[in-house]
Length: 461
Image 1 (cartoon, helix red, strand yellow):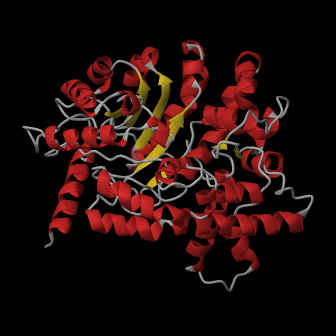
Image 2 (image 1 turned 120 degrees about the vertical axis):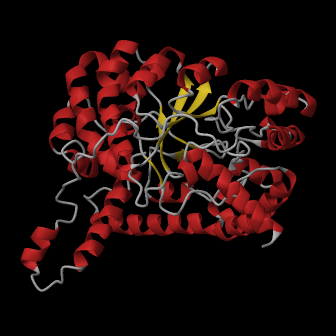
Image 3 (image 1 turned 90 degrees about the vertical axis):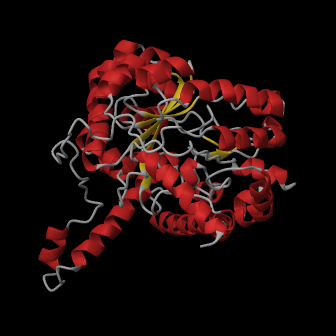
């Protein structure tokens, strides 16, 4: 076995131990550098590479040689909700628009009027496809079916092209450096909490803020109606302990605690419990400062979930939540610009003194830096090398924390019914029309329908 293969196996065991509630030999450190930063490092502008991600190959190779990480520093396009502009431009999107600075942005847009809650509640998926998507993506208007069909086909091809462009380099870097390759194929997915989904694409931030006061009951019913769609959209096809369902949480820190408990939490809690029941680990990003919600998280959220925190006191979060959940985040990315290599080592030592004991924490920044101007690469290199050399555990192999679904939740399709719509495939109806179709074809047709469902849902996050 080569040294690189041995290193990759060692790294793989660190991650597999962590996600099976076993103290690893060392805390893994997986850093992902944003693609804009990689392009800047390669002397490119922030627009061109987004139409050919293969342009990131050479700067990615240089950065991987310069900065230590246990997983690949540069991820493929569209990984973890990075936005590729080609598809959205072809769809005439108002939801995701390329800004003058080279970043695809999500402006404040409204896809559903405040008097349309009954349609959303009564016929959820059909309403999204027929009404919301054409409003948010102007070229997907069924009133012009040829234009819509052409745009969909081109957009799908553009997205596939974008996703594939960097993949050969990504796999090359994994093999060259012996990186942990990530969780098994199909074990990672993403979704949104029901109220965040309604806020982001349907009602807007300002709209949902008014609806919390004016249409509380309808908002609760709407969150319950969209939840099963969001559950099945985010459910990984290949559930694995190292995989997860990534869920960015936007609205709670802008809400009163009473409204969070009454409106946001009920449908979201059911979603999390049903993920836990089937072994799919929720991986939630708690945006902004969740300090006032820590007790609620401890009492209401299923054990074994992973939580990334942006702000808050590390000691408090570790003490309150560290025995029930897997933790990450909190290390200030701003220090990559302000600290010298010596200063960041001292900062990391103090941080690890809090987060390392007892296991249950995997290194992560509070948020990723966006551009090269926000990072001193020598400081970043000093940070990751220090963690590599000083984040070992004395009690490797011991158990820690609380495994996923320790509560014993049971999957109940009545709580998360599979999506039904005139736009989705129904085997019984199809079989009645085409009785000679063999039964084994059902699986393929249902897979095609699921991919169609995912396509439409992807337009709304």
